[in-house]
Length: 547
Ligand code: GLU
Image (tube, rainbow, N blue to C red):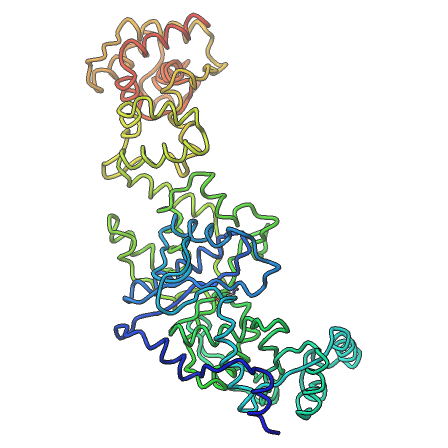
């Protein structure tokens, strides 16, 4: 067979050569050890936690090493494309601190290795397709859908492996005359790879995450170009990652199944194989068993969930690092104030079987992250969140920033900062009582009659002086307790609760409830200082009148 004649027949208009493309896309002159990697999403619209995990791994690997992270849009399946999906992905990842150095952007492409959208690269793929045909490594196949279905049914009945291989590869060795006849008749064709592999053979392969693997060769003549001339993922992956000089391919481990073919394809094309970082799926506990995240069942698989709940970006990033690198938490303990990007991330520590996502742990991490923020940062992030998700609360926060910041300063800045909130959504329940409109009516413990509560509150009002320091203030609460025949001796009370009608804790709770509407609040003395004398007194009086 004259393969060059076949190549000219199939690709009459391709005049570029692989060599000219190599010249057009020269190596990057990156520093030694720099990781050049990419995200290569299909623009289907939904940005999920898995995208962020992949983005974070890729971003850390690239930027930590002085390399490049670029965005390539895998839009070869026009049917699945959702308009605006690329922009949503770019914006969402940017929100989480993952910025691309190169590739598709809101305003077209940026960088010297484009185009970065695969449908615009058709001419490039055809150059390499023609080369493979000219070398006898690829051939056209004119099988119809119907023939392929019949083949599959036969394989199923005979309990054979599925696919276009061996005796089923009926176009593999057809004459150029047969091919010419089909083309003249206007029959559609796909381009197939001529595999020389055998499932009898195995070879060794080293994956950055999965470690040393033994892999079975591929014997299937997979499709390289579809009938519209657009490549399959496999062919585009090889051509693009070669020409864009990708050093590391970070992708989901669902691609492990076709990895043998990818390795084969790189070799056939004469390309250096990149390193592969195959990441396992994100898992979660469902009852007693682990399962993969489901877009349908798990609202927390969508990144919009974290935004709406009000998880700060820093919390999500910090949690994901905890999840991905087991030594992150130790590092954080040793470097509580360090910038998270100073942590040396390594893909080698990724769990090959996939990471177990635990929302309780995220909440814990987020409480810590928020507790370390200063009041200004908390105020800005909370207000930004509220503007989008609770406009009424946003108005209150914005009306008097100094007041809001005083509230948000409670318990902040010391060695053991308070950890009241994990998400901005919880902030209103925590601090809403500072705003009269959100103040709830207290419900006092039934154990005490209204008179007891009223007496305690009246006594407090008599003694209350806003200029007292917290020690004097509390001494007054203790004095009221004793005057009422309740005890300040918590030890004695614990030893024999029946001996006392109540304690100083009860009296404090009456006052706390009258001022905040709740049994739990930040430090009551500080709360009163922020509310001021008039509002504190007014609140207590209102409650007394209702008793
Ligand atoms: N478009 C592929 C996907 O979304 C890309 C995989 C890769 O990163 O190579 O799964």
